[in-house]
Length: 374
Image: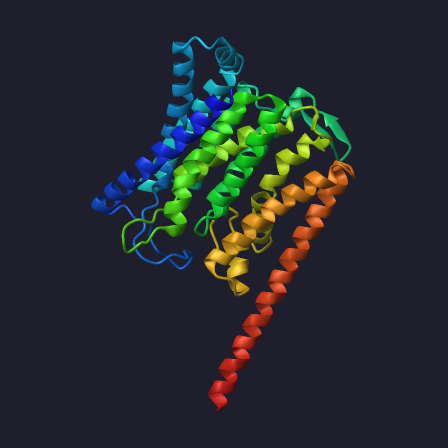
């Protein structure tokens, strides 16, 4: 089994690493760049088509693994594919839909309403394949959910998760870094639980992200080697993480005493907390919650004096620490206390960033005033 998982992982790294330079070449020939505006942080001509490689490579690797095992008549693996067949089919259908929507948005631009409808359709497809929040594991004292609540709740949560990944993509390496951390954790969890097909899907997602991360973070715009994920990438990864996170959350059990539900939601806390705060801020100030601004956590960290690289590393490490500490706390306290502690820690971090930014801005004004009087 480990060889199948490793094969899918390496295949995704290889083909993603081969495709992304070709995408860069085509993008520069046709001048398909991410437009610079007052909200964007980057400078120069950088393509935003990196996500074009994700869905085809993942599907090719998964289907290729099925084909190889069929050829050698590995009945153990084939039985796993059959058992999870409906899940894979609906996941690939949802990925195909969101992939086409992402391409349209990256190339010509589409309204957020169209993307929102597509996300709902994807969630409904996944729901039909067995991806469902049917148990809250005691959060707010709620356990098993009746179908008439579980189904719409699942759609809302999955659309929310897709948007959370889409909106956190604001600086180099952030969305891919957070998603990679989540994929590693999900892959390990599914492997320990014996859910090998879901483990393959997690490592396939990680495999396509690794080459992208290299080109996104270490690429040079002047040398035409830097690329962004674009909506095609963030929406694709959002769908995949919503599948993996929901399936793990719905698992009834633990891993060596660690609550599986806690492991499921912890890697996604940072993007989820961030999008809730941003939406609340926009609504409170009479703004359209779907219109972009400069109020995300990475903007706050930049305003507090950090560089892009430092802000990215800080956020990714924060997500990793949330997961590790939450897993440890699940051995000691119940899930509700963990959620409360997470919220308090997040609010404390946000207040610190607000006051830090105000302090730096005030100091800049004082310096400017002293220079005027000198």
